[in-house]
Length: 154
Image (tube, rainbow, N blue to C red; front, top):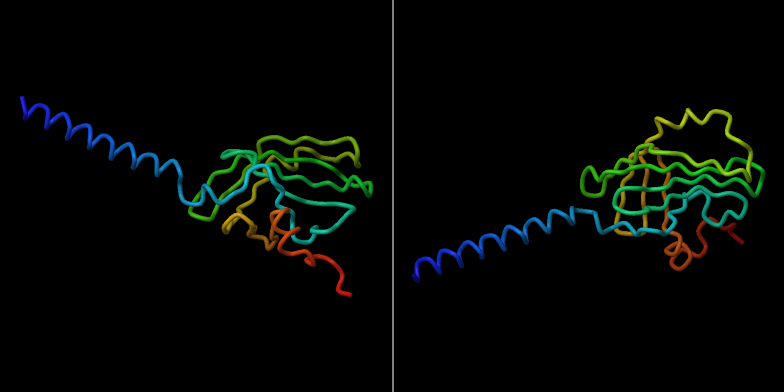
């Protein structure tokens, strides 16, 4: 009887260790470094009141890439992408859908965006860098920690 109870306890212990290991895999490296629902503004648009380009991580699968030039009569659209974390600190986002707003100039060719993709590198939760040299800065970080970034030097 003792052997059976010991065997059952050993199985339960082994299964609990496996379950703990599985939970760690769900929180893959880098998965908790992105802040969902907050704008990451492209560095050359921080502080720009007339137009902006930014990304917002919706959840652990989707990200919105928005170009808003509506205040100066240019295009305003959002590309929804599905993203995958490829390696710690590296993700790839690929076209899923597009929404064009009617407050800017209409886009001439919507189909040119169907092969839209970006490879991004992210560090901690404040910065996202694209492979083409654009840096995206989390809006609240820019406001609180970089108040002079993007502003004219006086």
